[in-house]
Length: 112
Ligand code: SF4
Ligand code: F3S
Image (cartoon, rainbow, N blue to C red; front, top):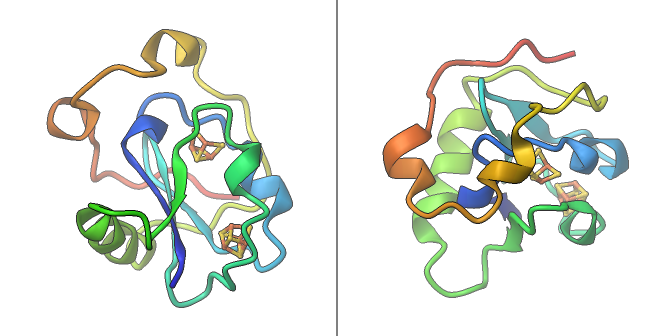
């Protein structure tokens, strides 16, 4: 198993998660992060750190699509290990429905 970043990260992108990961397996897109499934050691430390509750174990039901998204974009986007300034409007996006369909960006972030 692995942990995966899911829909509510999009446009919230708090980045608290990257600070606690012992193996630095987060990768940065323009408006969300993903976890590399082959690098994650399933420690679970990041899950409670996310203010948007966007990190889930892939054993939760219905997360197959998110496992695929995390795997695909972790191989395309740059690694991120340090928190940066999150979006100013992050709280307004928390809980908005249909973010992947309407707001997902496949563009890479800058990493660090
Ligand atoms: Fe990193 Fe652990 Fe979270 Fe996996 S579960 S992404 S290893 S902090
Ligand atoms: Fe996203 Fe939560 Fe990390 S909003 S960037 S998974 S702290």
